[in-house]
Length: 381
Image (tube, rainbow, N blue to C red; front, top):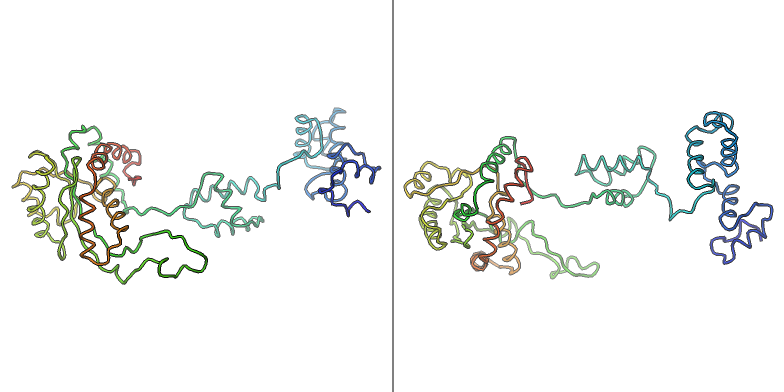
C-alpha cells in the first residue's frame, strides 16, 4: 500500500506504520512524520518548508543578521523574524499542534468588520459579506455573525424612541439637572398624568406560539388583525406613589374643553383619594390642549401647581411604564370588542399595586441621572 493512500488520521498505530513505510524520512514520532509528509505533499502555499526554516536557524546560530539571512535565502525579512522568534520561544521550527481549523477571517478583516458594525449599527450581514468579498475573503454570513458575537455585538430589535432635536436634548438636560437634587418627599407629592390610545388588535403586538412545521397559518397559531386595528379608545389616567388615580375614557376627539372637563371631574378627586393634600404638584406633557390659555387659567383658579415639563420626554414620565404593564395585562385577556377593551383596562388599572407605583416614584432620581449621563438624549426608560 502506498503512503498517500493511507488514512493516516484513522490508523491506530500511526507512528510505527509511518516509520516502517517511509524509513527514508527523519521521523521523530508522530509529529515528525506528519511534519515531513506535510513538507513534501500538502504544504501550504504561504508556508516555508521545514528545511528552509532549519536553514534560517543554522545561519542565525552562525551569527548572521536578519537582513543577511533574508538576502541569502531570498525570503522576506518579516518571515525570518517570525521563524527566529518562534524558535526562541518554543525551541523548534516544526508546526505546533493547534485546535481546530484556522479562522477564515484574518485579524485585519475581522477588526474592519467590528469597526463597520460599531459605526453603522443598522448595517446588514449581506452588506458586511459583500465588503469582505471585495477584499478577497469570501465567507458565510454565520462566520461574520460569530465574529461580531465574539466582539460583544448582537443583532437586536431597535427601540422606538421620540425624535429628539438639539433643543429637546438641551431642555431634557436642564430639567434633569434642576430636579436631580429634589427630595423623595417632593416626588411623592406629584400627581403624574397622561393620555394613551389603546387598540383592540394591536398592530405591533408579538406573541410566540408552539407549533409544528408548515402550521404557521393555522387559526390557533395566528393573531387576528383587522383594518385600522379594529378600533381603539383613548384613555386618560393619573397616579402617584400612593397608587393609581382615576382612569377615564375620552369620548370622541380630545380638545381643550373636553380636557378641562376631565380635569374638573377627576383630578381633584384623584388627589383626594390618594391623600396628596392641597399642596400637590400636577404633571402633564406639553400638548397644545394642556397648555391652552383657558386650561392654564383653570389651574390658576384651582390653585394647582403645574410641573414645568420638557417636550418630547415620555421616558421622564413614569406613567409610561404603567401603560406598558396595562397593555400587557389586557392583551393576555384577548378582548373581543371595544366595550370589553374598556372594561378590562379599568379592571387591570385597579389591580396595579401600590408598591409598583411607589417603586416607580422612588427610583425617579435614577431617571434623571440617566438623562444627565445621556446628555439629554434617550434613556432605557
